[in-house]
Image (cartoon, rainbow, N blue to C red):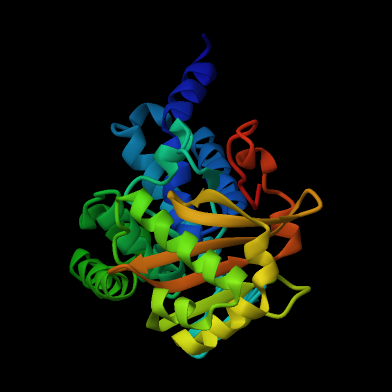
Length: 306
């Protein structure tokens, strides 16, 4: 093989890892692919022979690319979904069959990267997000992250610590028992279909938050509190009627279908047996890119943004 072919082969060995880093940084599968491709271009323009740790070098390069993309995104304010706490745009969900993930998804979703965590990461400042993602999720030392941010290692450590407190307070680690989570989701759907307000309130946390991202063509919706969310769930009971069981970022969720197309993807955050957050993607453009084979076992994942 030529020297360039060898370099390409070495890069491919790290591609899945780099996509995982970029997805956590950006919340968009399409932008994550763009960031990984940019890392490949930068590698080609560099003297790879002097790079001692290619994986580490590529990880920090992808981090730098993602940092620039986040800062640019903040300036452009693309597709905003506002709540009273700030700017929120639901991340791309990774939808897979209810019976499990494929090997590539396992890599992409390692460390329990549920929708709840991705939503919280989107509330962090770009520098905080980079410091937390690279250090806490991928064990990159602070003295290697600091040059990417143009900060000292001590300041970078403080950024990660601040981000960590935000994440731990808002995004609990998901219950590993999928069957227990599925039973709670099923109870929510059954109560929605039956219009049973009391049963809905019983399965919802008193401070539950429901967010809906409809893209540029549909209004974004935000609901807070068990009574308000329960009332909304009954209003949109047709989604529950058309629900198909899937995994959304590795956690039991549902895709609502009608006439062979996806109407919504619903992701649930559950703590202590109650639903604390319900994140609903209804953006037609992003839903159209979901592979509906996840519903019948003929396909693998739906990956919006690609």
